[in-house]
Image (cartoon, rainbow, N blue to C red; front, side):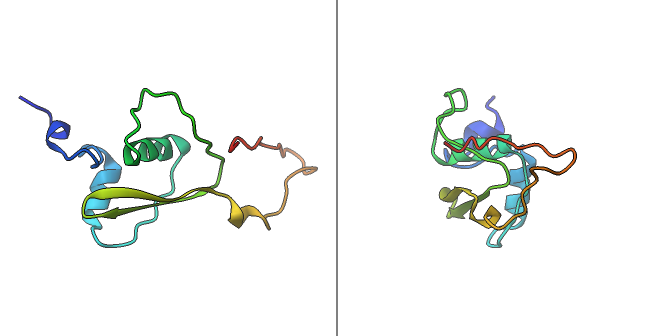
Length: 106
């Protein structure tokens, strides 16, 4: 007997993930998801058909804007690792307890 994922089209997120369930409930609508980098990496790999076990060769900074779209069940990457919204953000250097986080988007 095959698993539910085995029957899914190649470019469809696994049916058991909570994200894919949310996406299915909001078919045809815009959906904003705030998540951590691991989920973003998994969605990027899924969208670009990069196996999960492949070493990561793409940058991913903190607090980035990433835009994916889905058209007739096929996922597309439209924006990745955009930090332009942070250009006017106040800097934390010099404030008590603040620490700089290195930019790993390289």
